Length: 96
Length: 348
Image 1 (cartoon, chains in turn green, purple):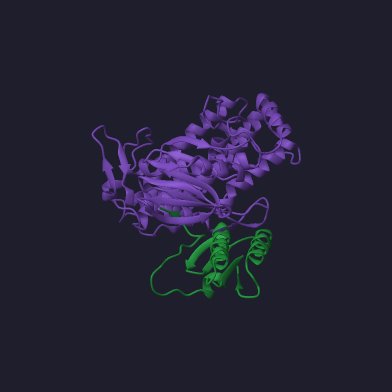
Image 2 (cartoon, chains in turn yellow, cyan):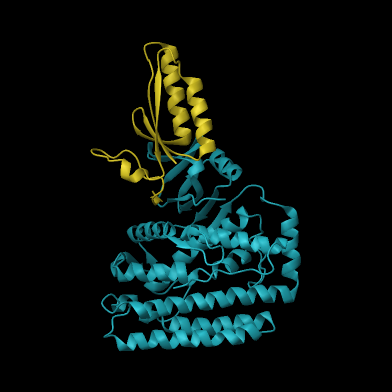
């Protein structure tokens, strides 16, 4: 399944910037970065549970927020992109 | 149930693959070209001068991601793998069965029958797609298709493995004899004429294309054997030789025509590869250039995503999963859960 993860993390304090880095690292372990704090994850339900728990453990619910959008398996028809391309299709041919 | 995961191909020379958290980071000249989570991959194939960090290789081995190192032109050099997966009892049973000539004969016969049947389906499918006006092509395809069908009784009655191999060779002669007719006339300029199979090095464009595609299928067949816990080096049809992945080669026979040959011809017929996408060396060797190699890789990955119904399991699956499913059926037969190995038969 495909999940879109976005977050807002307060960066006014050193601890906040640390949480920001940790959240980005957690997302990169499971998916790709498509915009600065927007990640697309192709995960199975078990891995999604892991990722979700890890992110929820990182953020500070008093000042930060994180949003999960479940795009399901038919995600291609639900995503439209314009402008510079930063991501890749994890299900398409991966040739570098 | 295993799902069909993606394979990462690195063809850019001078890239370096590192591990970053749980993902592969592809770097070149100090820039990050891509970062992909390991759990989305089932294999990494590196062409030529590509570096891999030891920690990435370790992580791949641990997670069952196969890493293959190939020369820039696609010749297999080495593969990195971790602990042999699966069960030692299964592997012991595999060795025992491979040592029994009558059992090896039975499997070899099944595999070759499927290979011949699939080659025939490819010819007949091409005959059906053939435009009515092209009588000579149609005739060749139908005639050689008929000859392939005629080799089935001989195969069923073969009593030694050498007989099976002989009949396989004979069938291959007929099949390759009709190979030229698979090309649609407009595209079959002299450049892609097929005169016979040549390897190490391939001496014409078709052979360069075929050899490359076979290497890709072999990489997949080898990982399939390993992922179900079978030893890829102990086969039934192919004889044991140090370093030769005999079982992976056995497994591949059913797919040569259906996956690799058909893809080679549709690439030419659809003009996705052209004659100037190849370079001819002084010794007569014909090699693909980088653009062609990338086009072929992209087409192969695309083909692997196509779905079809598996004739034996009667389930929808992708072309990329087929070789894993056949490895699984082979393991089930070795384990004794199936009475015989059911090879893959394409219903063209």
